[in-house]
Image 1 (cartoon, rainbow, N blue to C red):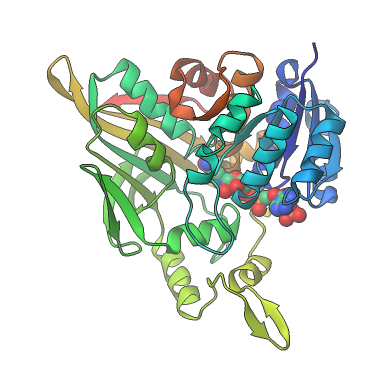
Image 2: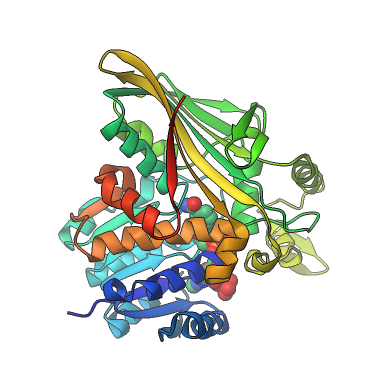
Length: 396
Ligand code: NDP
């Protein structure tokens, strides 16, 4: 029977998901791309038709409204919803999937619009509702979270009896030529990097000041880069699912210029998430900043250089110490040539498509709410290799 796929969100990531689903139309069948602004869906659909030769449907939806999403799922008869809107819509879209007994997938965990804190609590709480609906919710199927979680599961399955430490290392060495821009949604990005850092050691979360801990890491095909410790959501599920783990940290590279701009914006209050009064109007500073900054989707044609994201795991195999590095390198210009997007959207959108493909093909199954590292990593790792994100493993 022909499957039906509903993608919600037509930003940088939605563009890649639409392209990649169309390129795998044997699995995804009839595809609909829906978002708040329908013109963005139409533009993507036009490009997919031109480059891939597949027609995808478009729709407008306000995904903050569960009933609107329910109606759209019913209208499209979707078997799965791929949520690549913003983290603020996770819960409403999950509720619509529960009501319509439809599979769900996202790439970022729920964040409340009024508090810059993201955690899985609310999404995990929907486990029994998904079980009752006999539907599956796969959380965090982007790159990080997503592929990095699968790298950890793969390391656990093939390289270790016990993993003791994991460092997730995220480097974007892309250059878009602007003095300052973010590679994905500026609001989500700036909220993430201006927050306090946090890592997990011996069963406890340890908080750091923003950007307090830095290490220089030599990224293959990129070179040495300053890498700063941040809190990142995949750690919350990985501490539950990786055997024997004693410490997990997350590092992301930032240039001095990016950090200087960010500090300056923060110091003048432009990263604020609370409403302020401006000439009789109420505005949220970070939302206004988003209006000023280049749209991440427009960075594609200008971005040169590579991304390199991976994990370093240390532990024990057959009584001996072992340390391995699993990483993926992607060239921004290569991404643009294939799907008209830069590398950050590409490396997020491809794993989203892969997770959805494994669900629709019945390779990964099970009712309830799942994090991606809970499934067999092998089919996902194979698809990364064939769908544009080949990876490497190195013994260190
Ligand atoms: P964009 O801001 O480019 O796109 C978001 C899209 O969602 C826009 O089309 C926007 O519509 C739409 N949208 C927002 N609110 C609603 C709503 N209420 N109803 C319907 N549509 C809505 O973001 P990205 O494409 O860069 O990122 C998409 C997601 O991917 C985010 O959740 C982000 O956190 C996640 N991500 C995950 C990564 C990972 O590795 N796991 C890495 C990078 C991103 P409009 O155009 O009208 O504003």
